Length: 101
Image (cartoon, rainbow, N blue to C red):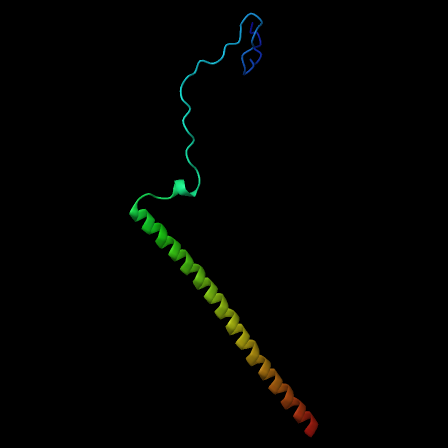
């Protein structure tokens, strides 16, 4: 007949008759890889030029978005001014026509 097996613990169980020995691993610990922006920057001339060109392209893209937003605001302001003048002209014309009859 089958006997049930109980799970074993992940850590070894130390008994009283086994002395704990320090680890004898003497391999050197490698230095952690440098992190941060200077470690990630490219070291070749072509990569540096490509990075600079990408930065310039990003600035130009942001500038074009800003200019188009300003142009949209300016066009909207002109359209509101013209329509305000047209409404003012129509109101004055209607007022004059009402007063003459």
